[in-house]
Amino acid sequence: DAKTTQPPSMDCAEGRAANLPCNHSTISGNEYVYWYRQIHSQGPQYIIHGLKNNETNEMASLIITEDRKSSTLILPHATLRDTAVYYCIVRVRRNSGNTPLVFGKGTRLSVIA
Amino acid sequence: GAVVSQHPSWVICKSGTSVKIECRSLDFQATTMFWYRQFPKQSLMLMATSNEGSKATYEQGVEKDKFLINHASLTLSTLTVTSAHPEDSSFYICSARSAGGADEQFFGPGTRLTVL
Image (cartoon, rainbow over all chains, first blue to last red; front, side):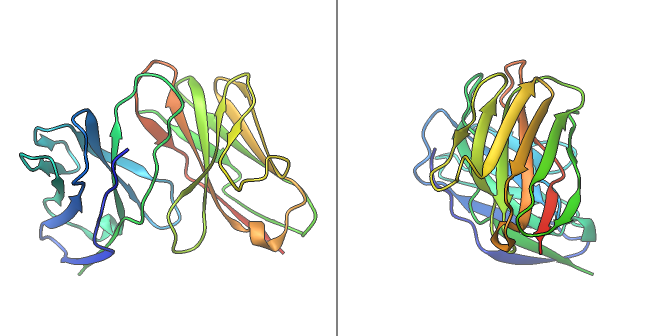
């Protein structure tokens, strides 16, 4: 699976959009971009994933550049509860097998009142 | 959505004792479960992968005789930390993958182990 690079930390004002970048310049054509987050002392929570089109769900939007070498997770109106470590993971989508998610260091997002 | 539970949520034990952590998939069948460990201010590190009815596959550097994993059913996997020592104190997280072929991994809430 391709390697990802994320800034170690970011701050965001409450109510503003939080834009979390992720670089994955070695991504392959069949690799998806996944985002998870981990609130302190909890298990990771799935947020969103995408291949090449932009995706949106009730939690966030995922913007993937045309060359797919980077992406941005957008939390449109950040709240204090969004304070967490956000992990960008690139991997092939598998329908079977034992390949687990591998976590990098992620971005620690602090939402400030 | 798919729910994974862990029990206990936290445990304190004396050095030299064994501790068992349960991981259950509540509303789906999990052919594969993964166990992670997380030290303070660090990322999750994969310890092992277990498939129902077969032996677990351990990551390099993880002692299989110390961290016993049993995946006896499609909804339950257990991790037993044998002869625990203070350096085993950590946050243990399990994850389950659906038997239905979907690629999503669902995570439990984690178990905080403190060894005195």
